[in-house]
Image 1: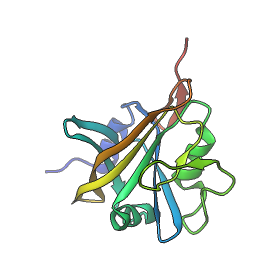
Image 2: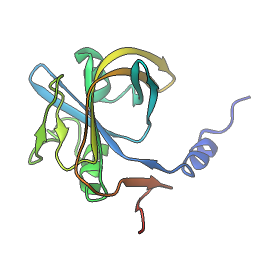
Image 3: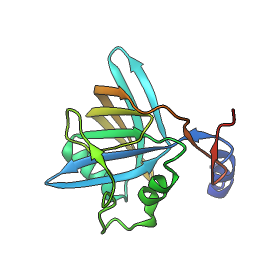
Image 4: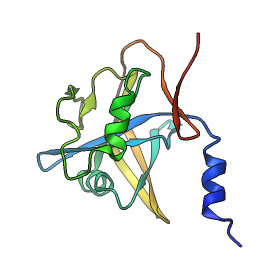
Length: 161
């Protein structure tokens, strides 16, 4: 018998994670969303995995474009995380007023991040409300010095010295 969804949510809120923005560029338009479910899978081949909600617009465009970028956010980029987490609806351009750059795939990466990955989609599998997306890293770069933006129990946090 499955457990109650609210119970699982409460338990998962006890897992702290870094915060990233997953982005893609498809048919002349940039799309992105905040993602905390992101991990390194393999160094050989170089693979990462992200989990994307299937009902998000970014999900469909990552799948259609076949490429995506990941910006690992710094502690100074909480506002950017909020923008890409849905405070600005999908129908609006979440990249308005933000500085971006690209590597190999053309996926927009957000300036000021701690690190960047540029990926080619290799596979995705639908599980319930999400898709587990696997990407081959085609380019990577360490960004600005700083501390990571952390998320724990529905709030942002910062590392202390």
